[in-house]
Length: 102
Image (cartoon, rainbow, N blue to C red; front, side, top):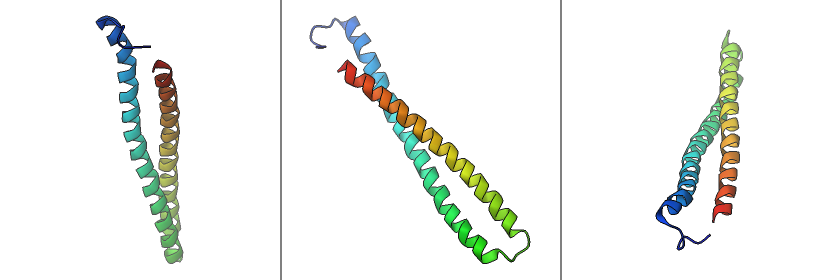
């Protein structure tokens, strides 16, 4: 569709979905980056916990503390990964929509 032949009202109806989709993709990308950072931080802390557990396994109560923290990190990481997957799927759909509009 050519923009040259559109009237002002038609133009705004044409551009609004484009604007909305591009803004949503940009916003989703920021949230994806944030969640990827969360996943990376959780992975790093899980590696640290592995070292802590190896070095303190003889201490009373240390296994429970390390295990509890590890479970928390795994839940947090799972939530972030699910969010990334959902947003990437949404972005793919938005990009598909944009390709049909252009």
